[in-house]
Image 1 (tube, one colour):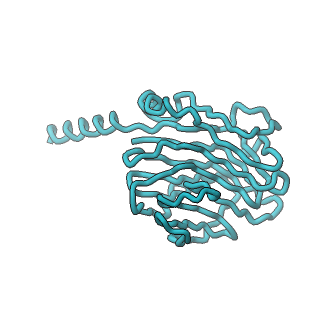
Image 2: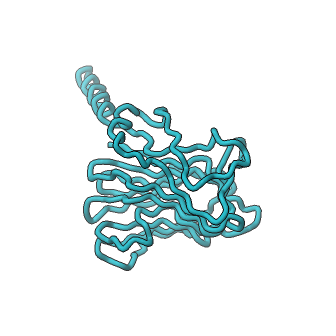
Image 3: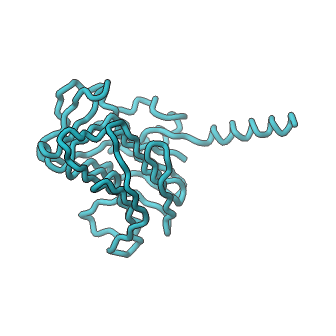
Length: 239
């Protein structure tokens, strides 16, 4: 019994030693002054404390210099005090559509990634939110040699759609009515080996298996209609 327990402990230590989760990009907006307008590039605020075994993770990412989110808007989102902390506020009635995009993400067959959004929908103006929580492709690019995924929320319905390599049309894989109440929510779009997992508030909604080696050329978030507050936008990598 004692030998079995020691072997189990040793196995866990070894697995933990070879695993890591570090921030490819991380921003929680705590360092921004209230009222500040956000520019066209959201800088990476990863200081080596946003994951386990950061030294290993940071070392493997040293060649990737564009670890930022690029932002498009008509008027810039601003930093506000929201629910006892700072948040990035994007009211599309004022800013117009807003998109965030991380580029040249080093996704390989053996590398795991996850996009994390911590958000609060502002229902003050009773505007039904319409947005894309995640895309792994640039919708203006003609490239179709990988599985393209899109997670959208409109009229209270969360939908995951996919287009297989070489295909133009998207197939709806998962759809569910979800109430995004007046509270903080956490969304994860997670790639693990050959699977894509859709997670909301620690509950797994759906798992999709890629038809070939996964690719995330970009990670995009697109806001079309509504008032959004983001306490955290992060993109983690692991192994």
